[in-house]
Image 1 (tube, rainbow, N blue to C red):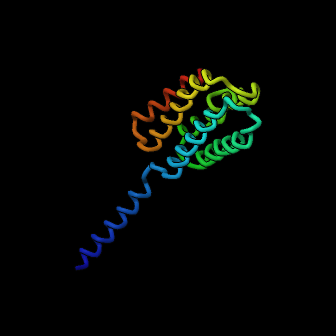
Image 2: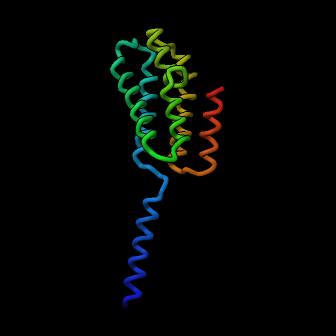
Image 3: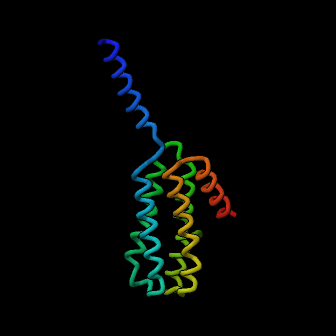
Length: 150
């Protein structure tokens, strides 16, 4: 009877420890998806006047910054941090897109259609990495980061 109790307690401790050791972060995963949807939705409206959507642009920029700050607060998270830094950079991807929209006032549908897949890919790679955290998705993120840094 005593051995069963000890075995049961060890099983519970092992279960708790293994669940805590998981690399999967549900908050990051869901917020990354939410940020992607927010970004793509806003991009789809960028053929309209920037001034009309300025509050939404600021909300997206705040969301991007929030995610970067959240990820910087976690340890052993360099790859994800690098990706969020790229997404926050005003000279790359969504950051440069929003700056261009502000500068031009409106963007052409052709430009929107060309830029959308690139930005969508960045989010998709990050979402896949957050979901699986395996070597394949890690390599995809690193490859994407390296291609953007060039």
